[in-house]
View 1 (cartoon, rainbow, N blue to C red):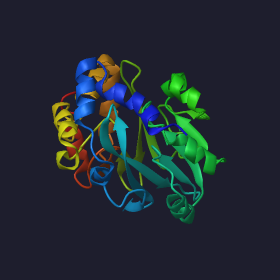
View 2: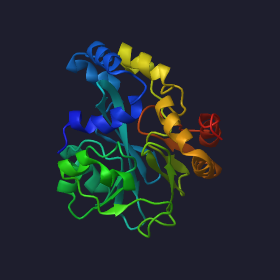
View 3: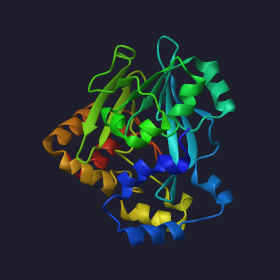
Length: 279
């Protein structure tokens, strides 16, 4: 199992890399410390619990996870496919209770790491679901931390859905600069789009003061793309604009992302507004 500290490195590097000097990072890490008992307020209780979101779609709020010392909530999305099997998008921490709740819905058949940052809990779920196929964005294979942790990657995610969920979930890829890759998923029956880091909608009141200030400064509290991700997307040029426009054209009813409050209505218009800076 990759420790929370180890697992946060790729995420933290993506969020703050190049934006803050080493001295500033150290200062922020020191200031953002807090008592462990405060962690519960950062996540969206009840944590590590299945919550119905739409027909055959559930979310699991978990965390907080540490990104360069900044503690943030994190979310998994669960799809139930037509064959009864489950797809876990951006798996969060494993608990026996959550495992039992998932088993009541169906067998876990797919584990999905949709970005180079959302992989830290894969190994635990691979251990308890050995028959599940582990999917990841191609760039994840190149991460030394992933290889060191012994995380297994069975198949790469691409621009089109594989046979396992084709016709049920539409899929695409956004490839920016600096190794940024994110796969998006649209559950057709419920009109639910699932993202990881392309949009963030954190609530400052739930965060520690210094973390809230940093998240505001990076636009991660504005239901849009954070400045850290914007930098990577801009480097991707026209190919990124085309990929994002394709995603927006789907016009989802709802949008889930890994960090912050989902869009439970007016998904299409809010998504268009989230990417108005780009498209």
